[in-house]
Amino acid sequence: MKAKDLPIYRDTFELMKMITQLTRNFPRDLKISLGERLRNDCLDIVLNVYRANAARQGRREIIEAILESVQVVEMTLRLCCDMALISKKQHGKLVERTDAIGRQAYGWARSCP
Image (cartoon, rainbow, N blue to C red; front, side):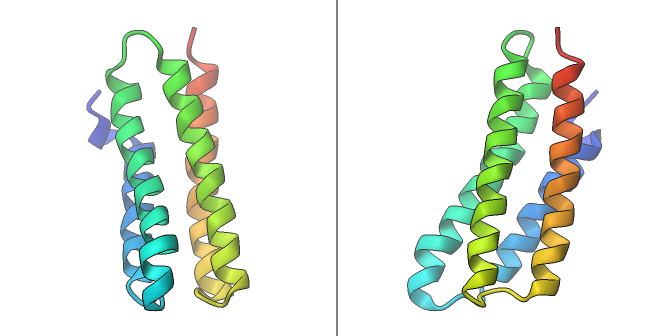
């Protein structure tokens, strides 16, 4: 199956789009540090979904990298919410998306030999 047809890919891509939109409104000093970090972590998740889907060996390690990146994104989003860079409503929508990605990645990891 192509990666772009996977629900986890659609969710990760949507998360990346949402974060890209939100970080546009960050103050200049945080846009570069925090905003860029968030976008890069989301891009890593999307790319690792592609890699895991294509991998014949080492799929579990790639999925573990996805799960780690999701946790980093969640922690960074919490910081953004606490610093009032994003609203609680925006934070809630993003956390729903990261939770969905995490559940799918855990399921994917369980199905790996």
